[in-house]
Amino acid sequence: MKHIECTKNIQSAGYDVFYDEKMRILKVENVRDFDLTHTFECGQCFRWNLEEDGSYTGVAGGRAVCLRREDGALIIENCGPEDFESFWFHYFDLGRDYSAIKQALSVEDEIMKQAVAFGSGIRLLQQDPWETVISFIISQNSNIPRIKKCIDVLCTNFGDFIGIFRGEEQFSFPGAERLAELSLSDLSVCRLGYRDKYVLAAAQSVARDGEKALSALRTAESSEARNYVRSLSGVGPKVADCILLFGLLRYESFPLDVWMKRIMSTLYGFKENDVKGMWEYALDHFGRYSGFAQQYLFYYAKENL
Figure 1: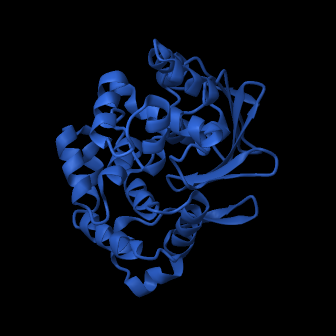
Figure 2: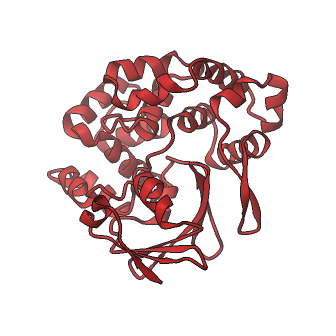
């Protein structure tokens, strides 16, 4: 493998990058605080699948890759240096110091200390806002295997073909304009149930300006971002917080679904219907790291409670 000179951002993060051009395999050494299972099984994403060898294959940004960890390094198959620098470095949030976040969350909070230790390799992916909107509308009142299946069928039928990787046809996530052209009859192949009308209406709303308003929300005022997201069909408080956190990178967000309400009740003593109290506690206790705290708590409780 050939050593690659990378951007200052990558160098300052302490990574050494090597590339095998013939095999199209990228190796990133010195990657800390990144466990693939922790990251892809904590409920934040739906297009990453576990392979028999322990690696994960997924599609994001119109790119299909396979990841594995090897002696402290991150191995990315089907990835060149330019794709890593321009997309995957940011998507996997590799420029952030997660050790500092975990330390800050664990101070004087034994519950969080245990959760952080259990899910120590979680990283919050920087996902596409539009894909996040539709994914979490589909996620309502469903389970992860079903959500993943629905999204896979949606992409296979309406996304763009991006190639064959690991013997499988790979497809991008369909844009808002593409979905806005469809009818409820077209969407029936995805078996979305009552969510199909929400998906179609949200696509029509976002497509009116070619996704420009949605894409601009990462730098908008928090109230403006929340109001826009809540204006979309099928988006209630919990789905809005998921979109804000996972798609718009609003890390103060603290999504509260049925599971998280139960977790906050069991671990922190809240009544399960005290949503306001839970939100206020998260804002006061976890502050700007509330979204990270939510993921550590969710993954810990999913496996232990």
